Amino acid sequence: MRTAFDVSPLFRSSVGFDRVLSALEATSRAQPIDPGPAYDILKSSEDAYRITMAVAGFAEDDLTLIQERNTLVVSGRMPTESEDTGQYLHRGIVGRAFQHRFELADHVKVAAAALKHGLLTIELKRELPDEMKPHRIAITTDRARPTVEAKPSAAEKLAA
Image (cartoon, rainbow, N blue to C red; front, top):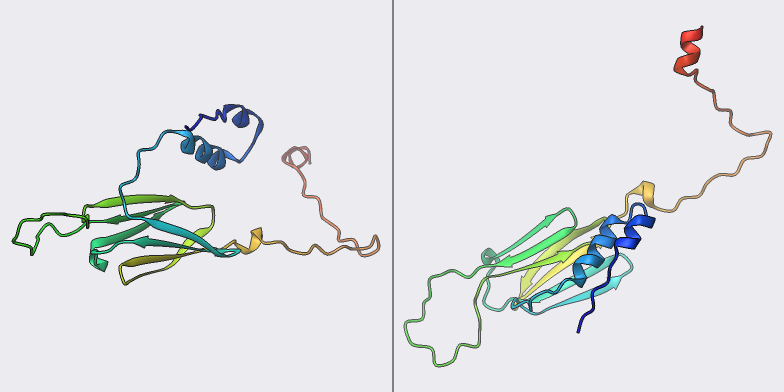
């Protein structure tokens, strides 16, 4: 049984973690069992991930992948026309429409997607902007310290 975790005290004492806390809060809500296709999520390297979904019976045109901000939506819809004219005695291959949402971390983008042998493979890559990557800061001596010119404030300009 899942227990609810109240993250509201964390909202009062943290700044800039809204998405993380909202995601934690969302996972604590009861979710219905997803009838969609089975899938695996693999972390293939430090900044690369792979989602593999079993979508037997779906063609490329039946599948849709949409990335909007930090959400990847994978949906599938089989054509309504059926070539089968007989009566099913057992129907184990379910061809119903599905939609699955994956919450992506910041800066994670879909790099590629491929459908082969009934498996949809989605390659994801985290691409940090250059300004967010670690960088070395030069240390200067007192003699070589760069000077910063002070710009006069608006009050100083009015007084002059």
